[in-house]
Image (tube, protein in one colour):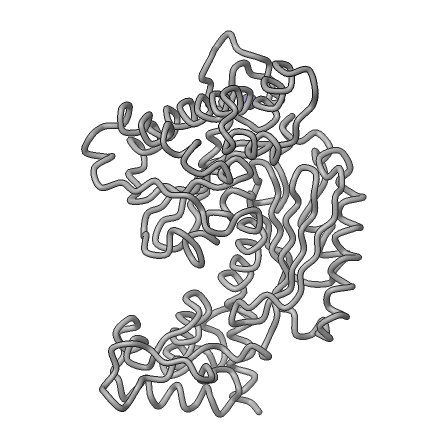
Amino acid sequence: MAPGSGSLSSLRELNRLRIVDFLRINGTASRAELARRTGLARSTVSTLVSDLQRRGIVVEQPGQFAGGGQPGRPAALLQLDPSAGAAIGIDFDHDRLRVAVSDLSRIVLAEASARYDVDHDAFGALDLAADLVEQLLDEVDIGRDRVLGTGMALAGPIDQERAALHNSTVLPGWADVDAGAELEQRLGTTVYVDNDANLGALAEVTLGAGRRARFAAYVQVGSGVGAGIVVDGSPYRGARGTAGEIGHVVVDPQGPLCRCGNRGCLETVASTGALLALVSASRGHELTVQEMIAEALAGDAGCRRAIADAGRVVGGVVAGLVNLFSPEMVVIGGDLGEAGELLLEPLREAVMRDALSEAAAGLEIVAGELGERANLLGALALVLMQSEHEVAARVAGGAAA
Ligand SMILES: [Zn+2]
């Protein structure tokens, strides 16, 4: 249903949608907060909320009250009725699939993950993802009719027109694959596609370390290096969908050849693969990321040096991002984020040294709170952000009932 058509065109319907939208994007709110944030009168909010409660779209959160209410009269916290719909999130990581189902109040109802060579076998990964979704929906007994949509996180620059990865050399296994359409065919739901770092950013600003920030950047340092930029609660993708691709900023023109075809990209010196190659070579046996971080935390000089150097070089590129975009907060996530201050301290120093002092003034650089689930939770958040038409149809459907 197109916005503004049919019964939605009435002012009352639009105001009702503003309340639903606020709860959809922010999770919970008291009536007073809804009035403040939507600009509607308190009495209007009360009437509309009662209406939405009668239709089973909004409920009071049991036992939860907002702070700052009148003494003795705590303000009830409202949320969308969890059972009014469900969202599916899928994170196609390089070597792993993560799948989750959540309700409308953002509670994850079921979750699964499996190791898979996602980079090199797109169709196999899509099939496996569809199987996992099927299992999860059965497990929590949710019918397809209740699913609002599926959020899909892909590890590369996204062509939003095609809902697929750009046909670049970054992920050759996904070139020419219409990822969104293929997944829609398998799942029978609307599919929303975005870059994994954009979704990690969305999750950290809605649920994690960046909750207070209007302008935030999320930097993911793992098997790939990328950034997501969030402006006023929405991911900023740019004209070509490649905004935030810091992993392919050249930091050493004579450096190693990158999978993008260029030389000395940030990713070739700061990704976990690059660091593991260094520390493994220096000791003659292979290490995993977790082992490298554990050894660094236990004091191993080589592992500490490799992680600190990565922090410095990432920090140099983040300084450029800070100059260009002026965020109030930079959240660091990805596998290497687990190294904590061993990565963050040199990264922060490099940003403070290289960025314009006015741009860096008051800037917070913090560790992400959501760990390896950030992209998956972002895929779920994307569905709740994007599915306004489906929610609108439910609001309007309730009016007809
Ligand atoms: Zn590159």
